[in-house]
Image (cartoon, rainbow, N blue to C red):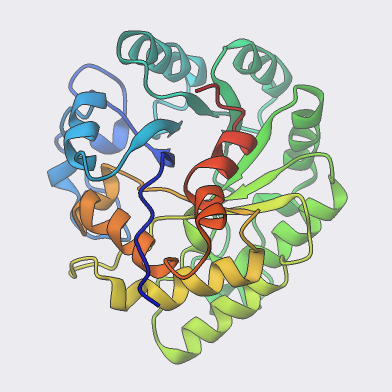
Length: 306
């Protein structure tokens, strides 16, 4: 039976806007290059706003809303980024939900979370918890902040302010995420970038799959399929089809969202190519299930008003 690629409304559940020439993003400064999974990222050190995004999405993809995720703004000013992105939203009617910056182990975290939650578009916060840089290092007992008592006390406050938590960590730390989710069942964890399956060897993919599968039965964990490009290689569906399909199988169609991670993933592919690849990978699902993956789940989890 011939299948048709999804052509309904879409919510991009993870993307960024920025103007690094006027705002404090230390990693986007002209003379800075941090270690980055896609290598040299100089090409994205330029203004990127909703008109640029919509041009990249093209009319082929009906993106009706987006979720802005913190973009490493100056950590001394977490509220500054939130104020800025609300001015963007007011001008362009995009983004339509915000994942704000918050440092959960800082002494002022309750004050910061209260202030972030007061902004009309803030639905979640993100604090990358660091930790082991390789699977081998994780096996030696190196832990992330997810196992730190002070950090966890800050995390506990998310429920008080009705905030989700966007988690960005490699798959070899997901055993800690499992315990975090079980210990704080009222807080929704949204796993960013598909657990970062960067090692595409058979051994690496098997380990990633096992790590993701341990989260399958935990209802307060969802996942965003995004950020699965490879360094020095253009994005193509054959590199990523299995990862996309297995993620949906593991978590089910009610707990998965698609996202572009643009403009970051422009380093490895065109937005049109990436979105079409997502659609190709799940074209055998029913329209209703694809509608959940591309639109309804993000609308629900990020409480987006269309």
